[in-house]
Image (cartoon, rainbow, N blue to C red; front, side, top):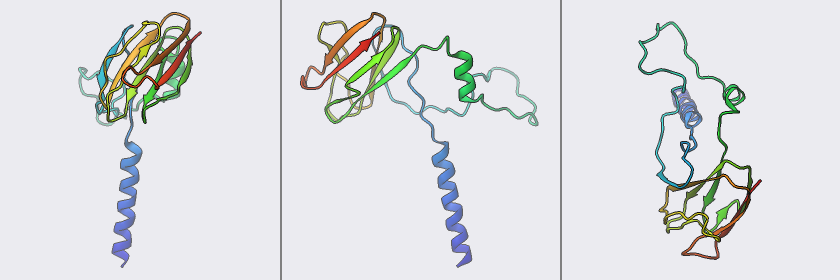
Length: 162
């Protein structure tokens, strides 16, 4: 009975470690305009500052990734802003989004049917997106941009750029 309890405790600890180590990273930076990408699993355990071409370090030297708060504070001036809108259940999650000029908005398509993102004034238009695909657009001009899904025009959203 003791061995059974010990095994159960070890299994639960293993599950917590595996669950706690799973991380998701935002999509890579995009150029101005439109980009379609597919979702992929990325290994986030290697710090961005590690040179993979450098000779191997002494095994006794411990390498650690920089703290996320330090990275943001250190690099905040050079990092472009990205906002996310989820397309799910035949709607845009964050139907109205307010951003600053230069912000990239990425739409992530999570429905089983194809959707797209089309501005009312023909400022931008994505291709039809399958489940798991993403599309990004960088807003460089201030204004209000109303948009919809062409196959489902009742799906609407607004981006306000200040």
